[in-house]
Length: 204
Picture (tube, rainbow, N blue to C red):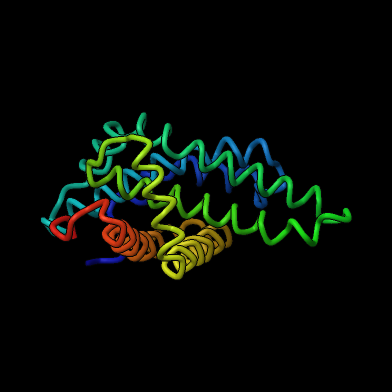
């Protein structure tokens, strides 16, 4: 598997524009929130491409764009609840940080944020396996994130490091980092979904 994933730079124009417009987009929560909604379909399309490349190493880049068009609606419907939950928990964490209940509620809010983010990523991997979007899919993604929490934390750490690298050096980062990270995250998500019986070993 080649880490430099063809089509990576073409698949992330919104991120390049965001980084060009503002070096620290997280300072603008509304802007960051709208941008984060696009991450779900992008992840689903990336995982769909990696799924195709696992069967055919010369899979054309057009699979990436076809996957995006095919999965965008389901991906948005599955990603948005997790993204909103993570946003609410993070906002509450920031608001309660200096109050009396802050130290008591902070661990719970941190766990909720991490589970929500991981569940969203796992749900995108599930959609890439052509699993139908149902309540069971979302629950399976959440259960997998809790049951296989070491892999969930590893995935979030890898994605976080990749975002930092791309933020510091967009062109160089996009050329080398996302393919490697997304491949590892996709395989980890597959293992997590297998652990809860959501996918079979055939898809791996």
